[in-house]
Image 1 (spheres, rainbow, N blue to C red):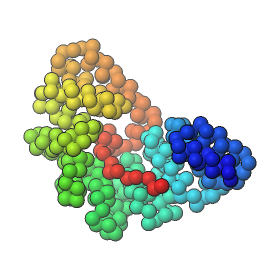
Image 2 (image 1 turned 30 degrees about the vertical axis):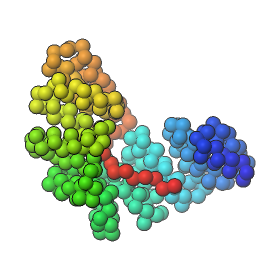
Image 3 (image 1 turned 180 degrees about the horizontal axis):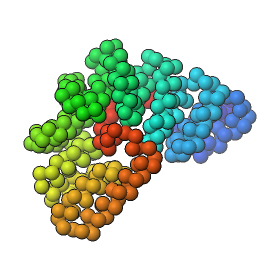
Image 4 (image 1 turned 135 degrees about the horizontal axis):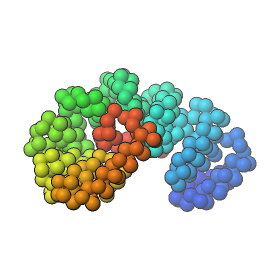
Amino acid sequence: EVIYNLGIAYYNLNEFDNAWTYLNTASEMNGANADVFYRLGLVASAKNESEKAITFWLKALEIRPDYHEANFLAAEELSKIKAYVGAQSFYEKAARQQPDNLLYQLRLAVTDIRIQQYEKARAILTAENIKRPENLNVTYLIGYLERAQGNYDAAKAAFEKVLELSPKNSDALANLGFVAYERAEFEKAEKLLRGALKEDANNFAALYDLGRLLVKTRRVEEAIPVLEKAVGINNADPGIHYQLFLVYARLKQKDKADAYLEEFKRLKELSAKVGASATSKDEVDRIPEPVLDREP
């Protein structure tokens, strides 16, 4: 027990190698303690060793099948690597084991949206909205669902309600800017997207949509710093590379255009391999999720 607690103490100090040493020793001394394997999973996750983390959480679940925290964190780790289909089953178990845990329910709903199981997501969000009609996260995710399905009137209504609850919400402004863009209301969209960036200069979705708006309206020189900032925030997004390809193609800078086009193709192929293609559109991964903090 002393060795186990030393491992936890080192983990809390972000001294992950020491945490690993003590927790691993504790697991060798008592291989029937699910908490030890749960903590080893936390250390592996902190070290970005996703496969190892999931293995430890599965071991914890072998010992204690009702360990809802292990189910939840396994799902979170799978989501981190965009293995959304695999994540769904773990979120479902956690949500079933703790039906009153809002975080578990909302993470499951987000995953259902990502893998296009929209009716499942709608059932969760409708139930939570009845219980918590003024909850910002629930309202936001209703907008997230409606946008993913292309129901822009309903999405707009949900995001406007978010702004009533949180008037400077950058993500709600960005989503409303997206809806305006899709309706070719470019002046309105630009105002909303710039408003989102005023509140959060690093809002990737707002940068992406503002960049493509500037490309669409042939303000390509103006689009370059916006898109380059976006690619600096999320270099793994295929769409941002495609927009930069369009920019440099229109500026007749062939070498740069070709480089961005090749990177776009590479990332699209990689996305398909890891399962990200299970989402309904590339844009679904670009919708900012609300801040849903993990429980302690």
